[in-house]
Length: 301
Image 1 (spheres, rainbow, N blue to C red):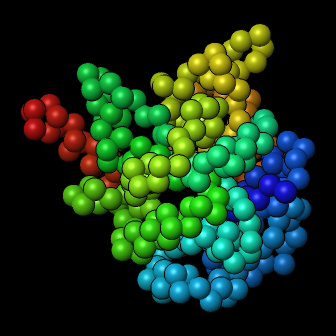
Image 2 (spheres, rainbow, N blue to C red; image 1 turned 180 degrees about the horizontal axis):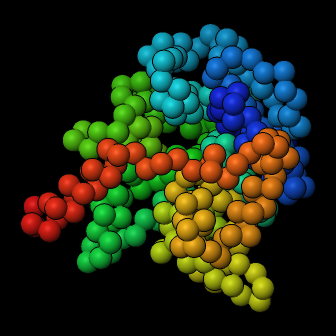
């Protein structure tokens, strides 16, 4: 059986239900382990096992919970490697794939588990723009935000030490801090291919399709099919705020039908959902940082 995991608040279980439904549609046996960080839910979700923080006695869980218990986002991000390690080490799983709950699958995922037979760790690149002559803000994002996206990570039992290291990094600091070269749980992933010779960078560009990779992972229509760079079918899309905004604003319009399908599935589990609920205003601080970056760049600093 294919084993996945995710971490969520109870208020966002409707996204977990949509994710589970998209996995089920691929017609493979699977179980999605769901860690709720804010208490209990009686909600029954097909093909899911719900976990709560009180289910764990592991020292890593306790120390990270104590440090970040008042900051839900940091708690969720920091618990990724700990939850994965727990499932591999304490629950006897051979392979596990972590997914953010706003991922949604459109085609077969089985090859990802086949990769985990030969490789200890799986990573998906952001595929940010990489031209230093244009779109320099995106180019520099590779170094500010990280090369790999932490919304998808795969590991097998040979990656226990790597997961432990990642957990310790998150406990050290889970913050956006350009001065220190940190970006929450994510920037640490840049080191994993250096540390673990069996780590694998997934080159299938239909994985983790998102609003930040429209330039490198070009969406193309071929024989009525949407392919990435004319070669890769869309396996799963990361429907975070950036992706949804790019689609809704028409900058990534080829993915609009995929987005419509996602929203319709979400509404099955949250009937009063408004599409505006999926978008968040760009933080004023982010706008200010970008404006400062523009000024500094214009003056050659």
